[in-house]
Image (cartoon, rainbow, N blue to C red; front, top):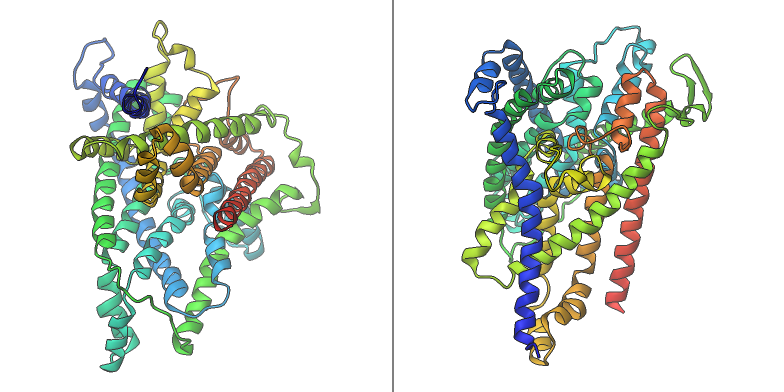
Length: 547
């Protein structure tokens, strides 16, 4: 008869080994193949010839300079707008703050290339504003990418800066007011120093998101080459897989550095908070709050208009000449029709289900392991966030599109795309799960164990009910991210298995811009429905917990 202690040890071993084996097979192994292919020369020998070829190419240095210039400008713009909106939301009395937050968060619910489509409908050669003003605006290129990527990264910057602003202590500001310090000086001498690490963290996140994004570059980049499009051109355009691997490794350097600095800044910002801090409750101050309200609403209107014009354009007969409403653009018969959309829902469901199970199991195992073993595994779980989606997708070709290897059967399947999505967004799910596990009362688990419950039963009857909101959130996080991602899956589609974001890109490339807008609207509809279902489930779980 197997003792309870032995069953518990076996349970922990399974919870640890299964996710770690998946991390090794579906994350570390593919990435190692990128390194191998980058040093494999055309004649099959090992050397640095590919690096020499790339580093001597003017196209590579032009793409590198373009990427750094575009990402740097976008980051600066996002930090200014993010600070304005966050300050308005948390330090001012403004009407409709929930609506503002919902409006600026819209880009998170759609593929990144929707921003590019919206700008084309507004400012392209046949754009609404271009026709109305009569001014020829070249939106394709640097400024188009800055605006589109700025919209895409703004919600994440606002979330980080808002968290930094919320951690301030109201007593410091009360003391400053007693001493007669003006509002501007309080902002300059107290607020900015207190949130400097939050600003740095937001800046590095915005930089990483923009330098690795492929969707907007494919839609509105035009001839303005960046590193993400350079990888795509090397692999798909010229079939130079090894040179694509070299460019992928080059793209890793700025993203890994930015990710490391972001983690350091984030830990310093949120590690300095005090449990006894008194939250700030702003008083209405007309000189400050009226202009901040106008500024916040103005910023919030930009994503609403950009997304709204895509939805509107999908119903218009002929943009921008005939505005009769029609459903004809929803009759998509090219690029596989709506099959890729349903395939994406299927992929996203399995990505959410498998990813949540693996992450939860690993979190349970880590809580029962020595700290010396936890640290390297924790570090491994943080690595996926530093790897751009294009590089991860490319690595899957090198790892799984190899005949006569055990995992070749996965290539070209929806399950491989689901696995790629899991490890693309692994870090976000892992951090959320670990936070949820720390909130489960240890005394309840100890009591259940003292009463003779085995560890699997403690997990089922004690931990899982407490973790239900976190488990649901991680599932929908993976589901929604899988629905809208493009960069990680662009290399993994085949003639029989494609996804919605690629169909949108293909339709736009073929000149079916209105049909691309219709497809994007359907994709957004699925993600918004998932978001509503998430809120309903969380509310239901919350009511059951209280009852």
